[in-house]
Image 1 (cartoon, one colour):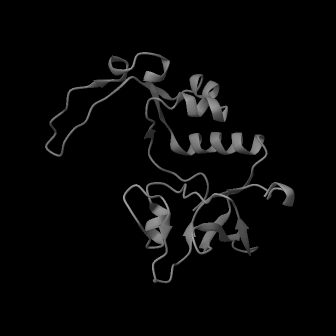
Image 2 (cartoon, rainbow, N blue to C red):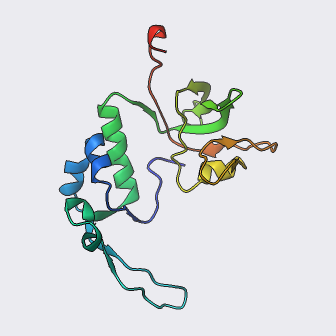
Length: 178
């Protein structure tokens, strides 16, 4: 899939200010055209509406609001921010496999490039993150978590097909820092 992926708008959760500040994108969000959200209300399958839940009634302050973002634009903002901070991002990557050692994921095997100019490469990292959305990557490979609160997944015996993904990597640290 081409980056950024098209999806309908996503509602961010309150209390994300601290994460966005640490990433260096909070000021961009504050001046963005995204709709600010101060509450949430749910509608069940029969159309009955819940009482609104106002964030500031439970924890007053600036962090008791959030935004309704346009996902592709928001993802692009995060990607641009990562690149500006030195990350190497491959948006033309298709994950073919996850590379494991005896205990955990150590990297990914990816196919890079457009249809007429592709190459396969292994990218290793200290952390492998499935950032493709709501278990999409994990489900594609047929993995199940070992426990409900355990984010380390084990591969299934089934043979995986290629899964679309964006891969963000950085060069490995010098040998003396490993």
